[in-house]
Length: 123
Picture 1 (cartoon, rainbow, N blue to C red):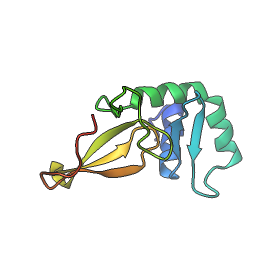
Picture 2: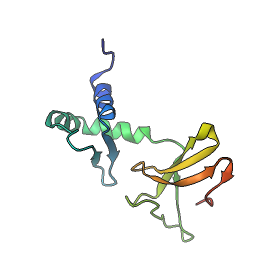
Picture 3: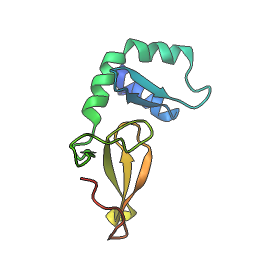
């Protein structure tokens, strides 16, 4: 028996198919999906639930997200998607951290590698 509500089922389906849902800077919804994973019925469900998905994705951002600023105070893009924010993800049982883009999730660099600082602090 499936105990998930329809919205949770939609998210679980996307996750199982490798579909990533990302909020766009312009308020839209970006869908990153493997070829042939996004069937018309699923796309209709995503369109119908767009507002809820955007709310969920905005609330899903981790509180440890950081922003890069230049010495002039202007934000600096750190990813090819144009994002100025990142978050560090613990790996190797917490001994290392991988820095990922907070917008698209793309790997940027390692901020710590086996307890040694790998990047200069960007702030």
